[in-house]
Image (cartoon, rainbow, N blue to C red; front, side, top):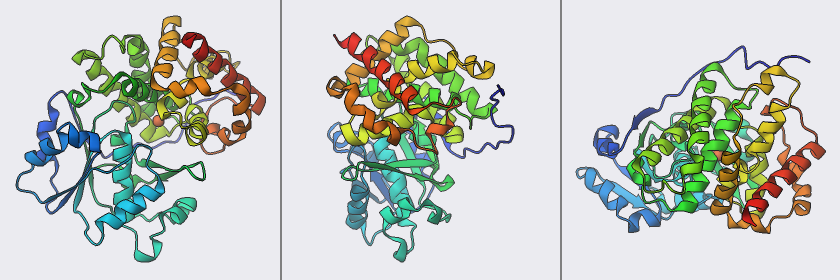
Length: 382
Ligand SMILES: [Fe+2]
């Protein structure tokens, strides 16, 4: 069997200026270097908890328009409504303070604001990604308030059409934020379910970046550091919710997983997750991470030596902790039954993401991997 080596031809580019550390939000005034008017995009919860006021207070001499009506798992229709709400005003910069959904919304808005009049139908554009334009877009300063998606350092935005039960991606180097302020203090009050869901996403992304034909020597460095680090702290998350040390590590490993997938893209665990979110509303992190141990086993048992030694082994206590976190992140898992998921497997096994996985898996292989993973999740619940 041929050995599966990572890409022998590769490039590296990640232009995001990163500021990291507890209290680093103070650097916001010097980070928003663009003159002119600012759109502050955030969620209603952050306005309630005072973050919106805190951020506007840090930029007293700037004209800021606040939009805090963003929604989780942004839909194309949500973006269209936000664009109508803003018209005819155009910001000179966007500050996005929130989780991955807020940051993805900011990227989609920045992208759409740059479209010419006759290209305004975002959905049509997303269906035919070849028409993506390459002019500069409104710069985004990302302030993540969760530790999981890594969207603050990636060139893509995920949008949904939940009526059509489809997920769309905008993927363009123009979508890299101009800067990211990753301040673990902003995650201190994140409840257990969201902490679990986002940590699981970071874990699945680090896995997908390693278990990926498109990995490069540099993406491997980021992915390996994130994956190994998360292996060590997944069992500590529940007890460590109030620990600044654990919060800082979660922010660090989430950032590293974002940097990893910014180069390699994701792979099979994410391909499996999208239909679960679209059809069953399973939160993204749980929908992708639940199957990681079985996919790791599949690589570990490979007759291909490179694949078999690609990942550190996942200890038993981490497997158990992962199942517990999946249940904490997603009570919806209890309603899933393996039989009902069989029809989704062809949708999961789509080229472009699933085939980044370095082993070839048939539909029955995938069905049995998912069944075993679901079984593990439910055995921890019972
Ligand atoms: Fe993800």
